[in-house]
Image (cartoon, rainbow, N blue to C red):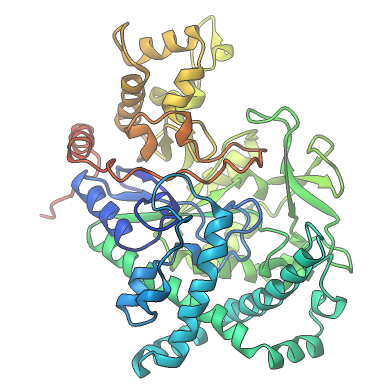
Length: 524
C-alpha cells in the first residue's frame, strides 16, 4: 500500500459527547469532523462498527457486517421523519455526560429504535421505503442471516434470562433445528416472525444511511476514515451461526479450539479470547469468498482497514476448548500468502494496515512486506529499559528507528493513555523519555506526552495517529480497554464537550505543517 504523509486522531464514535447514554454518528460526529479539518488532520481512525454484545467490546460483535444500533442518532431519525420526537426522550437515568452504562443504554435505546422502525414501516414516504427496499436487496447477502439471527436470539435470550441461565447462546441453548440451520425450522420461524425480522433490517438501514452521510461529509473535507477488522469473529454471532462449516466446530456447533495469544506484554497467562477458529481448508475451497465479502463490505464503510492481530494469518494460537487461560495453546499455520493473493486478485491493492504488534516472526514480516502493507509502531513500547544495550538504545519503537511504510501511534485502544503510562513509569524510564525528547527537567507528564506526540509526527512514518486523550493529557480515567479484563470499565470512556478547542486544533495543525503532514500537493 502506498500512502502519503498524513496524520489523524483515534476516537470511536461511542466516545463522542452530548447525546443520551452513548456517542452517536449524529451532529456531534459532524462537529468532530469539523474540528479535524480545523486542526489540519486528514485521518480519523475508529474501532469496529459492529453491534456489541456481552462485555460491550467492538471486537466481539453479533455481526462483522452489521452496524451498531447504539450509534444510531435518534434526533436525526426524527428530522428525517422516521420517528416521533416524544418517543425518543430518554429517562432520567440516561445521562448525556460521563461514562457509558451499556446495560442502561441497551435497556432504553433498543426498544426506542424498534419503535422508530415500526413508525418507519408504517409512515415513511414512498421514496424512503424504496431506499429501504434497495438497501435490503443490496445487503441481502449478509442482512438476511443477521436479521434472522437477531430475531431468534432476542427471543431465546429473553427466555434464558427468565430461567436464570447465564451464558446462553445459539450453540448451547437454541433448539437444535434452529442452531444447526435446518431449512424447515428456519422457514417456519420466518413465517411467524416477519415483523421482528423486518425491524432488524430497518434498524440497519438507519445505521447505514447515517454512516454513509457522515463518511461523505468527512471525505468532502479531505478526511479519510481508518476502520478496523478483528481477525476473528465472536462465537455468538450471525457470522459463525450461518457459516458453521467455515469454522472449527463440532456437529453441535461447539468450538473444538478457540483463539488467543500466548503470554505477552499485556498478560502473563496470555489472552484467552475464546473466538472460534477458522477452518482455513474449508475457506480455501470457497476461494475465501467469506473473507472477500467481509473486506469488500468494510471498504464500503471506510477508506483504510486496520486488521487486528495480523500475525494470525501466518500462524494462530490455538487453545483447546475448555481451557481457563491461553497458556496451553500452540501455534498452527494460517493461510499466509494464499489468502492475500486471492484478496489482491479479487479486490486489487487494497488499503490495509497490518497490526503487527506482539510476537512477530520473520514469516509475519515477510507476509506484511511482500504485500507492501504498513505495520504499526507504538511509542509507549519504545522505552523498555531491558532493551538498552552496551552499544546504545536501538528499540524499534523509537521514532528515529521507523521506516516510512508504517503507522506511528503514541498508543492504541489497548494501551494506557500516554499520561496514564507516564504516571506509572519508573524514574529511570521518565529520565530516558526526557532525554530522548530533550525535555526540561521540570516537565509535567502532560507536556511530556505532547512532546512524544510531536516525536511521532516528526517521524518518517507515513501515517501518525494519536488517541484524542493524548492530545489533552488525559490520564488513566481515559483508558479505553485493558486486555484480559472484564470488570465493566472497558469501552465506557466518553470525552467531555469542552475538549475540541481552537487552541489545541491550531497547535496540532502547526506541528503537522512543520513536519510536512497533510500538505495538499498543488498540481502543475
